[in-house]
Length: 371
Image (cartoon, rainbow, N blue to C red; front, side, top):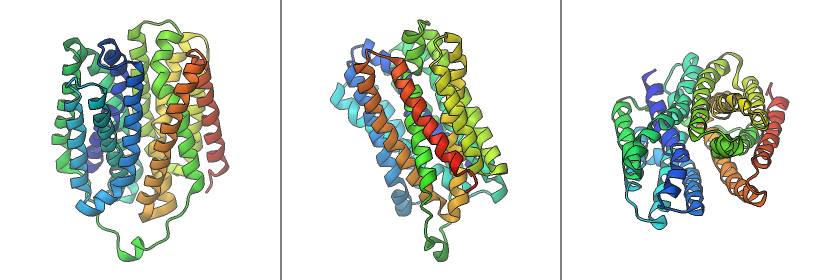
């Protein structure tokens, strides 16, 4: 299972750090005057856009230079983007680097899961998929613990420290990168199932998760009146839930099938969004872990479902699903930002939209649970 753990290191760096470590860095960037609030939001959008580009280009890159070299290139780009952001160069400097960090994450997400599943025995694919995708939650927890410590030395140290962590993970993982064999001509020529219902359910899940992935800590601090430390604790709870959701998701999907497991995970996502709307602050103790469990764990379940539906062509279905997920999150990110401003920073409004979208995804998955 060494390729699975290596793949997890790639996801930890490209998603858990290159994307999610920015959540606790956002207010620090504004407070230090490196960017204003609007500029900080633009940096988040640039990362989403870069992620979509990386997802769309990942398979083409792998066809040109192979999977291991593509993963090396993405890890190098992620580390370089972190180190570049340690320089206070203004908004015009940060936007392209945050976009390139997104590209790195998109390539790692597009390639790691399918490559690992093609490199392990069939009876280990479910567990392997869970291990790989658990890297995202592990990165969230690591960022939640590291960033407050690194910020004591200033933003320069925080950005540079994350870059050095990425380099260390790369050094440990690269010897075990998955290197799947090329598809035989007969399998490569097979038609790829459309799997429209799976793509729609996964995209709705992603759109629904924008609210907690962006506003959860702010909900705790400004929405429920808790101290900043409590907001960080809620975010760490989200990461711990994500680890559990991906590991368990891979195993459950391996036993009962991804198509049957998907409604279960989306049902938990609905419960997590619902808990966030409960006015009493203790409900956040459920909203964080449940949101991470389902909203990140659903990646492992969807990866397994893609393998069931498409077999050797699962990588194509996975890239399509991931691209739609990224596009849905990018569009919803801009939409919820406008809604949040228009409603006077109403957390109920953005989480209500997230709940509705999550419920729609649950309905789609439930209707197709038996394939």
